[in-house]
Image (cartoon, rainbow, N blue to C red; front, side):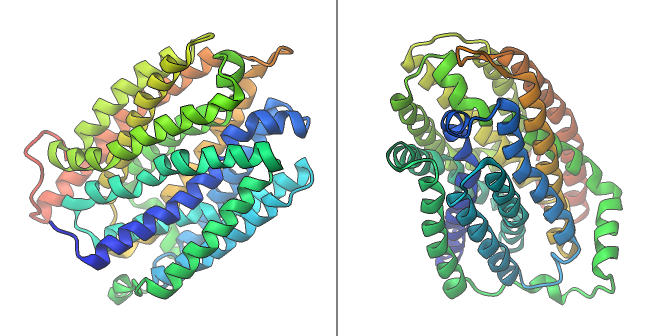
Amino acid sequence: MKFTPYQSFVIAVLAFLQFTVVLDFMILSPLGALLLQELHISTRQFGAVVSAYAFSASAAGLLAAGFADKFDRKKLLLFFYCGFVLGTFFCGIAPSYPFLFAARMVTGLFGGVIGSISFAIVADLFPFEARGRVMGFVMTAFSASQILGIPVGLYLSNRWGWHAPFLMIVAIGSAVGVVIAVRLRPIDQHLKIPSDRNALRHLLATLAEPGYFWAFAATMLLAVGGFMLMPFGSTFSVYNLGIPMNKLPMVYMATGIASIIAGPVLGRWSDAIGKYTMFCIASGMGIALVIYYCRLGVTPLPIVIAVNMVLFITVTARMISAQALSSAVPAPNDRGAFMAINASLQQLAGGVASSAAGFIVVQTPQGSLAHYGELGYVVAAAMLASVILMSQVNRTVRAKLAAAKVPVSPSPSV
């Protein structure tokens, strides 16, 4: 299908919105080496800062789930986005570790729900056979945050301190919010479906729906890898791989460029060969690369860049295919609640994963991280388990599309 000009605008807005939210989370990874030194905190405390966002986002997702299908999605999106920008501003003025910890909780309360609302909008406005392409474009936000945001964030932090990147996000986010308020049309077709459930009953009914169980379980495991590896990525690169701090932006920029080019292509392939097939291929490659990468010692910069590029492409492929496949699981009048619960469980799993990583990984007196190889095996096991769980999601979706007489991919998977 060809996208209309307004559909293209929606894709661009959602991608740019995701860019700011993802950047707010990802910026902590390259700032990790600075925060450990300037705030005089341990790896366990740094893992707790990452977890603060995740746990508060998880709680917010559950609280918002019952109301997610009761309002115009545009209004809901604006409400949570304004709160997210405010929380990021608090991070930008945080004078101490306790203040930063509290600010990350505020940011998570609002930012953790934005992704679920965005994916609900995608499912509302685009048919299933095109959602791989749409997700491919929206997911380029993760790559763009590396190409544009993280190198600029590192430059700002090196020049004006670690607060500066958060204030940059506040400036960009404010502009995005104005565009959404002015140009995005109301998204309220789901309100036309009669429902006598109150917010609590709607939440409990969605949680208890047997057809949603496998999707929820698979989503929780999807978060484990990112939340375990990324918070300590910059520290591992600097102290274990021997990459100078001033060369670190090159690593993020190269991997971001590769991912942003690959995203739309992977989205098309996901629609063409089957979303679950793409997920399996990407997961197999990712498992091998994670085990290899986490056991590296001092390594030449070109090899580090090459491994990171391929690894991030596999991560992008897993995210695109998984989100596109899961979007077909809920009924239209459950879509907002399903996405909110999905995001909540993902953040909860991510919070547990980042906290666990803080206990597994230990920073030695020399600065290097010990037990990072063991962390890689844990991540690889979680990726393998997600493949098994996602196969159940694939069966659910195929059965649902067959019942609705919607054409599916000729391959063995949707």
